[in-house]
Length: 218
Image 1 (cartoon, helix red, strand yellow):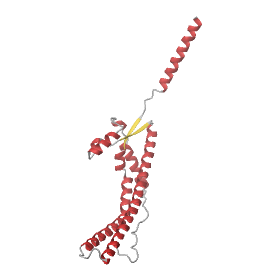
Image 2 (tube, rainbow, N blue to C red; image 1 turned 90 degrees about the vertical axis):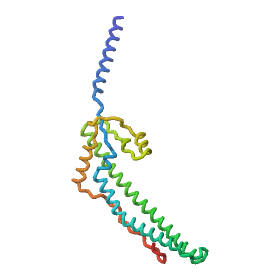
Image 3 (spheres, helix red, strand yellow; image 1 turned 180 degrees about the horizontal axis):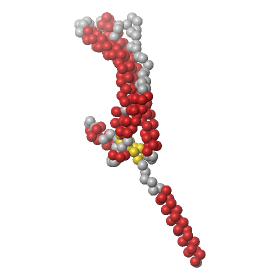
Image 4 (cartoon, rainbow, N blue to C red; image 1 turned 45 degrees about the vertical axis):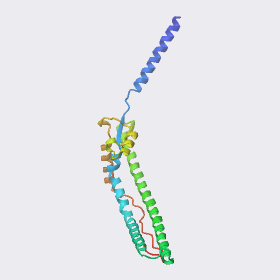
């Protein structure tokens, strides 16, 4: 009987020691950081340079498309105001030619938008890769266990819809200023970008599509 009690006491002491050791091992508090991603994307200099470069590279084609559109609008107005018989062969022929130019312009616009969107998506991915790489490095340097994203605040909303999107997507309701890594990250990322002197990658040069032979310029 005494032996059984003694063994029970020893087992209890060992269990308590084990729990105490586990508690000691897990006593280190979780270290967390918070990043305002919206601010990062707005104020990272490389992001601004990339979008400016895309705008510059695609402006000639955008201007050419607008010029074609203006000419089509002017020619359509001229056709409508011509006073000709709407059922005549000549009128119908000119109308068909105008419709063909409109269809060609729509095709060119779709191609333009597809290419520009692809360039913008690549820029977004480049910026996001930079951000996540810097977050990982800073977290490692600071010994952080977790870095969470500060969503847009309701006060940033410009409409009721955007307010509800911000509120429903919000994951951080409160954090102390000491947890905010945003400014430190921005400083490091912008300094590294300026030191590297990297130029924003440009899309392939774009030129307006040539006017089909025998067709009207538009």
